Image 1 (cartoon, rainbow, N blue to C red):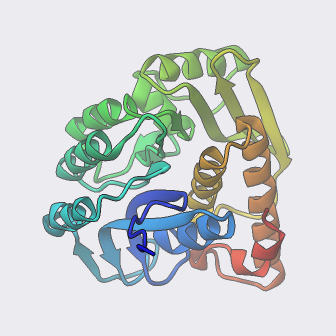
Image 2: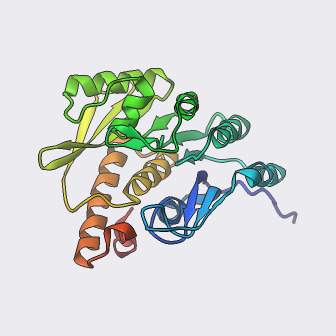
Length: 279
């Protein structure tokens, strides 16, 4: 009997993000969560960090010069992906490489999820130049799903940022974002009194808020947990709103567990304690 050497019998997500050895964020968080949801996770690192940049110091190696050679080996293996999920990209060149990757590896069945990690609290991150913001708008056009926070939604749509937004203004934002290309949009982390809200928009369906009671303080890695669940669920065919609810509730459990164990904010959320509850 001939053995079948295809590497494509299982659902796979190509995960494009940086890797931090400590601090619970990016690939280190997303890989176990995607795996728990029964999807093979294939990381494509953009940078290697000893620990994330929220600590007083860190080691960092830029993986950009190696990314295309790394991708070329995947091409030799004829890999196909059920999903392609992108996170923080540190340069215009990385955005170019990722755009080419999506073009080369996407099939009619591939779901592309872009987490446009560009800024927070009304401002772009210091590394994000005007050129990078423009290029991120181009990358978003390839996406089926995007998961921006309010700051990123405003940057992508050239909308002035303000902390308090009306539902009608959020609806206008998600429609503008959808017009860029994605059929599903969730604006994450919108504060409303004692709640943290995510606003879901899906073409042909009624938009809706998904609310969870706010607990604790902001921690590294929660956005990565959210994106990982959304990505794996999209590949697994879970309805979008259900996936957003699942991600929101799981993050709350992670934060509560981290508070209980007195985990420093810099160390992220101890999702390991509750990973068995994720389905």
